[in-house]
Image 1 (cartoon, one colour):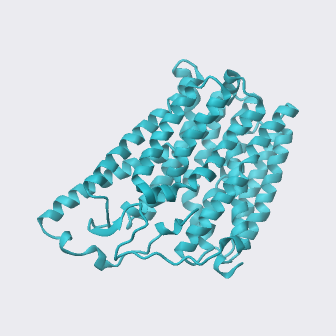
Image 2 (tube, one colour):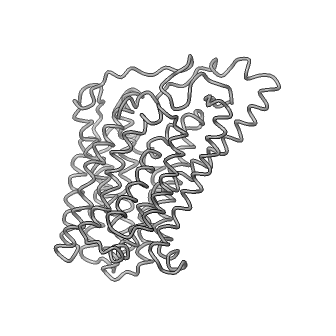
Image 3 (cartoon, helix red, strand yellow):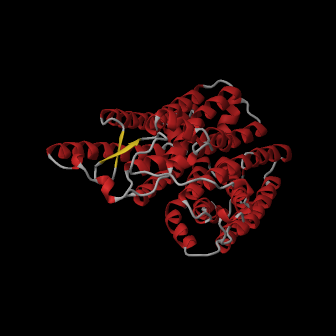
Length: 445
């Protein structure tokens, strides 16, 4: 990711929040406008986060209907479940460059509009190719927005980064689980057409687009000037690479590709992402083929995804207190292996237990993000490591869902696919233990 470290700045000194503009009668008006704009940004963050996963988790419960409606075979359906990580790797890497050129708010606004258009277009597609293209359009908007959300939080809420990131993460998990749970009942209530069921999620994109249009308008009205936590102006243009007196960017002399720890984190990220997208794309169909009703299968996927809401708050705190995160990697991996074994031997009889175990296993995502933050000493190093690990990981995650679909089509069952998933989970455990060692990438280790 090009020059991603430009978005990382140190905390401002108190003097940067003082000056003539922070006093006087005009300050009250400015603070009032800032508070109103801040409320718009909060609403925009929530709506954007709610909109970042329904394109994926809302498709799984209706995948069988989509396959039949478009004449899509299992291999192509597997390709469809591999598109999200591909788009996240390709389009997400362009987000910092776009933000430097146009500003982060403008790019997020365009991203939300793109999501809405893509979701609406794929519901109208009359063939597999058009459906894939429209899905890629929606996922491109998701990719750039996903990368820029932390930038938005840092810009508007520099003194509340933790709480606002928590709100954003919780909304993202809620959107993931909610789409999985309500897509089938909503589709049935709207007449039973999978096209209507998928198109309905475009409305969330429209709401997010409207909210970010209001934020963009308010930002242009305020001159695009960054504000610190107490409403005072700072000398930095939002989303650009230019910094003012109160900012400094840490030097970046780190060659991340020479670090074994960076590569271990990248592979670990890829293995957990592969497991997550296989679960989102194929778990409902595995359960349906075992005799579980479509609506129940969607609800079970929602439970699996919803496990990330409470655990995402707890797991990073536990991991941060440990010098070696290997035991957590193993514990989450064992939960995943147990879930796969359950789907092999008793897919319907113990389905609720298996989806709970897979939900715990999927919490490797907040764990790997925490590990990324702990494997570097500097903010610029963390950004470089994060960009490398995520781009590498998402590329590695592409084949998994595709192979699962191909194996199911050629064997007529799920045992071969579950064997592949088990192998990937064993690899995740092995490389995660290596990545969890107490190392820093600055040391070349």
